[in-house]
Each structure stands twice: as structure tokens, then as C-alpha cells.
Length: 277
Image (cartoon, rainbow, N blue to C red):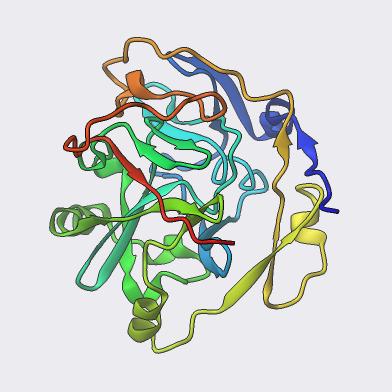
């Protein structure tokens, strides 16, 4: 019989590493301490490929198990990058871009919400909602670099690549869970002339075990708790002008029903691929 996932209070677990603030319309958000002024989420760590989950982010920070696998990030002109808690685990909540020679990613905005059994609902046009400060790019051959920050394109070059790149399908539904197979593994292997290691997830019971657990070379320890108390539901309010996403469409994943949308509205898309499990 499968074991129940451990429970954890995000507020208590993340308090030593950052500050909880209030940001309309989201309610409580968490702002990390000690990050560089040019820091962007999903840049201090590395990507690994998990057979059952796709491209999975492994962050270097001791708090990385939470904000890069649950919830969303928003860029506020006063607070900087702020994390909005969520209750659905994913290998990484990011959007992807690619072009000749380069791949890039950016944190998904709060308006991109997950609906169980349906998939990711894009409540905004990602090409508009995710601006220059959100995106980072690397040469294709270096996507699996163990310290990806060392191979990120400088901002000036990244802006040029962003202009020449196109969005590719990001997080979608597979066997009932979010997966992240946007970038073809074969493309990385061809560019790097090395095979991309495939790893399996190994569940652990606490953040401390992520670095202490003994795992096989082809295993990745992962801590996937159930938030307790449950993530609070905050009613959307009018967007603040200085928040660089459209928060008026953001709804907590825990309670958001699949929104009604017109088939011809390209700003409202659902990414779903269901494979029999």
C-alpha cells in the first residue's frame, strides 16, 4: 500500500531562509534572503532528466525543494522575486523557448494554473506575460551543466536570443501528473556529444534527507510533502501596475475549476497529453 506523503507547513519551513510578506492579490508570499540582485528563479542549480517526470530542476539552496516545485513566482518592483505557495508538485513550473543553438526557460506566471485531470491552463499569452527579466538561455549543449548559472548567456545576448526564439510546449498532463518534456533529450545529446543520464525519483521524508540520503547513481532524492495547513485560497483582486504579470486571472490550484474559454482564443490554452498508465 502506498505511504501517505509527509506533511509540512511552508510558512515554518521557509521562515529561516526568507521573509513572508503580503502582496495583493496573492496574500502571503515568500521572498528569499541573500540572493544576488540579478538573481532569477531556476538559475542556481541544474537540470536532470527523470524518466517519469521529464526535465527536473535541482536547486543548490537548502530551501529549493519547495519554491521551484510548488506554486509560482512573481516579479514585483518593490519586493523583487516573490514566491506564491501552491499545493501541486511538478518537476519545474517553467515555460520553455528554443532556437538554433539555444534553449531557455522562465518561471511560469501565477496566471498559469494547474487543474487535476485537465492540465495546465494558460490564462495569459505567455509571450506577453513573461518579459525579458524572466528568461534565461544556455547553449543547447550545456543544458545539463552541473552549475547552470556558469553557462547562462549574459543579459544583452539573452535579449537577442529571446527575440529569435519561439515558445515550446512546457508542463503538461501525463498519467495524471505534471511532466516537463519540452526539450527533446536527443537534441541535447546530439549537441553535447554525450548521453543524457536518466534518473529515477527516490522519495525522502524531510528536506534534510535530500543531502543525507544514500541513493544510487541513477536516483534523485526528492521531498514531495503535502502542504499543511492547506495552501490558503486568495480571491483575485485588481492587478497592481508594477507586477509584471496579469494577476487578475490567477487562481489557487487547490480550488480553481477549469475556466471556460473559447477554442479560437489563443491566449487561453490547455496543455494536456494523457497516456494510459
